[in-house]
Image (tube, rainbow, N blue to C red; front, side, top):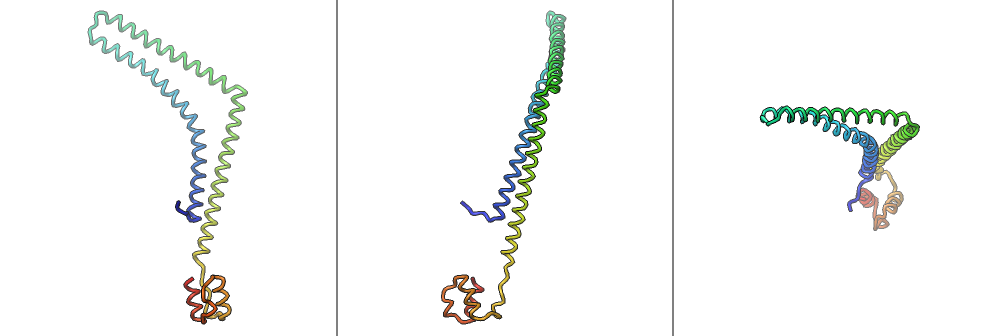
Length: 188
C-alpha cells in the first residue's frame, strides 16, 4: 500500500465526495429520463407500425397478388386500428397523468422530492466546502514546511547549538565544537 501525501489524500477525499454528490443527483435525474425514454421508444415503435403497414401495402401492389384490393384494404384497416389504439393509449396516459398531478399523494411526493433535492444539494455544497478548506489547510501546511528557514547558527552560542542538537537527537553533540555543531545541524 502506498502512502499518500496529505495533499493527495485531501484531493482524493474531495474528488470522492464530489463524485458521490454527482452520482446521487444524476441517479435521481436519470430515473425520470429513463421513464420518458421508455415511453418515447414505445410511441416511436407504435408510430412505425403505421409506416410499416404502408410499406407492405405498397410492396403488395407491385407483387400482383391475386386479390390486392383485399390485402390493401386489410392493411389499411390494420394501420387505422393501430392509429386508433395509439390515440386510445395516449388518451389514457393523459388522463392518468392529469389525475396523478392533481392527487394529494403526488403533491406530497413532489414536495418531499424538492426537500430531498435541496438537502442533497446542500450536503454536496458542504462536502465541497469542507474539501476545499482541507485542501487550503494542506496547502498552507505544505507551504510552511517547505519554507522552513534555517536559523543563523553562526550568531548562536555553543550552548544554544547543543540545545538544538539535543532537540534533533544528534549523536556526539557534547564532544563537538561550534563549527562541528553547525555542520551537523545543517545536515539534519
